[in-house]
Each structure stands twice: as structure tokens, then as C-alpha cells.
Length: 614
Image (spheres, rainbow, N blue to C red):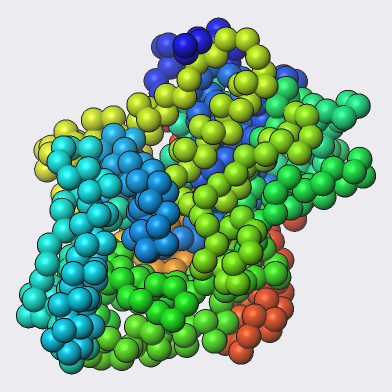
């Protein structure tokens, strides 16, 4: 029988809207830092990726007192560097991991229809059928068709909970009508199916804000340096505030600590080595590299999924761009800034050019990004064969670790680890209800999209502007429109990035926890990978807008721009290097801006925008 736990968390004042309660402003960060020092939490989550943010939402929505700390920025690691898909994993059907496929497709439906319809939407994808003799053609269409049909069946053939249209078989002409850039001599037809597409970093930010709206203390730039123990039990962590590097470390007390640290999971175990704790689990990092090219480089109205010798390759429409990826290779170097080498880039170009009528070259590339998948270690010879299932372990009393899995099933991982936490805490508790909890911006999204033209007229902007904002902020769009009306200078496009508005930079600093220029140009927006200049031409403008909110003086603005430009230079250099070792050496040459701004807190007062009621 489900038991109901008394609400031990920090209850939101009913007079305060969910949106205001979830605003991660500089003032909110200062308040939450005080809470970390002064309060004892039921659950302290380490890690601001999708699993950690999801765990914070799950725990806070059950009424637990929750804190989340992240050493860098939300989604700064793996969770901002994916293929941007919410999917069941078509290739996992082939590996007969049927339960994993069904679980992921269920989550896909929830995200697309209830939890985050403003961030997750259908994207059509073609499975090209390779040219072959007549007998093999029949076999291939039957084999792939059966797989895609099973994919639809696992998602639920009927009902609004699918969130995606059903698949369809196409002839060669039909396939080339949808994707004219496909070489006619390479295919005999295709099967079109649908998966979900999202901006992974924005989804994590929405999760973090949703956790904050439920009463969680949420602090980025807060690095865990060790565990606090009493006898053989973990009772908290030591934290360093990287925005005030001169201040001493402090302790955060918690009844249960949850480490959702992905490829850094082994580091958590290392912190307990002095008391003889063996690693609770071992995580293997697999590097995935993606290329971004302009939409004009390839003619097509759907994505592609292609089989390669080692894995699969996606070619996915992404606004005015295409995303091409990914690689799948072991990585044992710097985990904070995995680097793409010239070899990785050449591999991806060779694979995609095998089916395109106009080959792509390095001159077509706008952006490149590399991420690390946290795979549970196994006996498989290659990372592509390792299971994407997750594990929850308790290597020491008071410490739970969760790792593995895939982005799509973050909510399941979060529920599993918090289930174990509440069992450990004892007493009555409420079961996970995150399958019923829309993220901020999701409530009323369908109606807002339907009425987008009226919204545009009321606020004196084009329908295109409203559509752009709705697809990134959902019903929170009204707050950005109000900021534009209050300050017309925020209604202009960013220098060098006309797809984005200055208000998005201001809002990122005001409400989305962005503390540095890199946070905005790399994760709150995608300017760093969607422009050939990688954000260099936008840095000055963005720093002025962001600095007005955060109260940066000229010294801080200059340093933020210099650090960002150094990062761009280092990434460009790494992508010309022949192998991983040389690419890593080039990339780590640019220091991280966090923890280096010694004079933060000694600059001008924040901009009046902080007083806008959002």
C-alpha cells in the first residue's frame, strides 16, 4: 500500500506562482547558498545533469527537503552534448533489450504529450533500404519494416499518449522526394518513422527550475570536495563556492546523499577510499562527436539513420541546421572538456558522404561538439555493445549512486534512486508522481501555440518571434515578452546570431541560473555550435546584456569575453589534431572560467531587471 509522507520539504508560499518560485536568479542563488550552510536536508543531490536534476524534482515533489549542487553549470557535461533525441533506441531492438525499448518509448510519450511538449516534438527519420538484388531487397524491407513496426507497437499503436505518428513505407522515389540529397544508386526505398527531438540543455534547465519551484535549494558553481562522515555513514558533503574562490569550504548536512555524477561517478568512490570503500559501480566513458552543418548543405525534410561498421549514424534536421553524429569510442582523458579530433570529423564526413549526392567538406561545418556517455562497465569489447541500463548502489551508508541509463529514461532513474532514498529515510512517504508533473512552461502550451498569432499582435512582435520563444520557453514566453516591452533594447537580435534575441541572454541570467558567458552561448542558446564563428562575434553583445543583469563591471565583462574566446580557439585547434591525445592537449589549454573571478561580488549592483515580477 502506498504510504503518504508528511511534507518535510520547504513548502512554496501559495501566493507565489510556480514560475516565480522556480526563478533561478542571482538573489535566489545567494538565498540557496545560505540554506546549504544553515539547513539539514533529507536528500542532497550531487550533479546538475539530467539525472541529478530529475532526482531533485522527484524528491522535492514527494515533499522531501532537497538540495542540488553542481560544480559547473546545468547540463555542462554529457547532458548538453547528445544527439538531441528522446527515443526508444531502435538499435536496442536488434540487441533484444526489449524492456529497455518499451520503457524509453513510454517516457518519450510522457515527455512529448504531458511533461514537456514545449521542448519535445516529433522529428521524421528515414531508414534507407540499401540497393541490393531483388531477393535481398524483399528481405531488407521485411527485416527493417518488422523492426520499425515493433518500435511503434512498443510505443502503443493507438491513443494520444504516443506523441508520435506511425511509420510508413516509401518507394525509392518517395524517399528521394522527402530527402532529395540521397543518392538514388544507394537506395531502393526507405521506411519513415518518428522519434522525439529536444534541446537537451534546455530540458535540464527546466528540470532544475521545476525542482526549485517545488522548494529545492539549487546551486551551481558549487564543487563537492569531499564527504562528511560520522563513523561509517555519510552525513553530508564539503562544498566550495567557485564564484567566491577566496571563501572557505563549508559543510552541507543531509540524511541521504545522491551522487548522479555520470562519467565522474568513480571520483565519488575515490573520496571514500581512505575508509576502504570499494567502488559502488564502475562507469566507462564513450566519446560521441557530432557535426553541425547549415540546412542549405543538405536537401531534405526528414532525418536519416544509417548503419555503420561500429554503430549507427544520425543525420537530423535542427532548425536551420543539420546535426550529424555520432562516434562511439573509448575516452580516458579530460572528462570536463572532451575533444573532437580531425580523425573523428573525417570519420563522420566519410560515413554521411557515402549516401549524399553532394559530399560535405570541412568547409561546410558550422560547429562541432563532443560528449561522453556514462556506460556501466561490462565485458563487451566495444562501448557500442554496452548496455544502457542504469544501476543504483549504496557503497556506504547514507550515500546512493546512480549511473548508466540514457537521457530518455532520466525520470525512471531518478524515481529509482529516490525510491531507495525514502526507504532508507523510513517513515511514511509519497510515491513518485513525476509522470504527472509538467515542467515549467508546459502548462497551457497547446493553447498558447494555438493562440500564438494573437499573442504576437498583443505584444507588437511578429508571429515568428513568438513561435521561436514558445518552442524554447513554452508558456514562460509571456515573461520574455514583458521584458522586451519594458526594455526595447532586449528585443533586438544578438550580434552574429540573428536566430536569438538579446532578451534570451538577459532571461538566462535573470531566471535560468546562468552565471558565465559560456553558460549562455553554449547551453541556454546554441550559438557556440550553430554559427561558423562559434559565438565569437556574439560574445561582446551577450556580455553587455548579461553583465547588466548580473552587475558586471568592465573588468569582469572583459574577462568573460576573453575566457570565451580562448575556449573557442582551443576547441578549433583541437579539431585539427590527428588523434585524441593531441586534441585533448589542445583543448585543455584554455582554463575554465569558474573559480577564477576573484572580484565577483565587488562590482556594481544588479540591473533593475531583477525587480521585474516573473
